[in-house]
Amino acid sequence: MIVYYLCLVMFMLGIYCLIAKKNIVRKIIGIVIIEYATNLFLVFIGYKHNGIAPIITPEMQDNIPAFAAQSVDPLPQALVLTSIVIGLGTLCLMVALAIRLNEKYRTFDTTEISSLKG
Image (tube, rainbow, N blue to C red; front, side):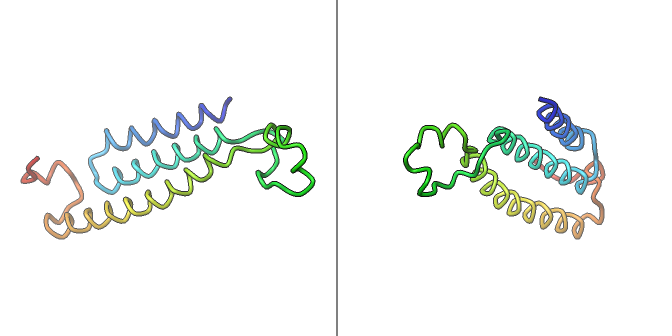
C-alpha cells in the first residue's frame, strides 16, 4: 500500500513543478514526472505478489482458471508501453517548442514572455 502513496507523492511533485515554477524547462520536467508516476501506478495495479508471467505452457493448458488466478495481468503492462511511446513523442514536441520559444524570446521564463496571446 505504501507504493501507491509514493506514486501519489511523485504525482503531486509533478503537479507542483507544473504550477509553481516559472521556467519552461522545469514545467516540462514536471509533466514528465507526472507521466512517470502514472506509468508506475499502472504497473503496480497489474502487479501480483508471487505472480507468474502470463505465458501459457503445455502443462498449464489443462488448468486455465488456476493459471489465470496466479498470473500477472498483462493489460497494464501493454498500456504502459504505449504510454511510454506517446510520452516520448510529446516530450520531443515540448522540447522543440521550448527551443523555438528560447530562440524567439531569448528566455525560458514564462513571466518575461509577455507577448504570448491565448
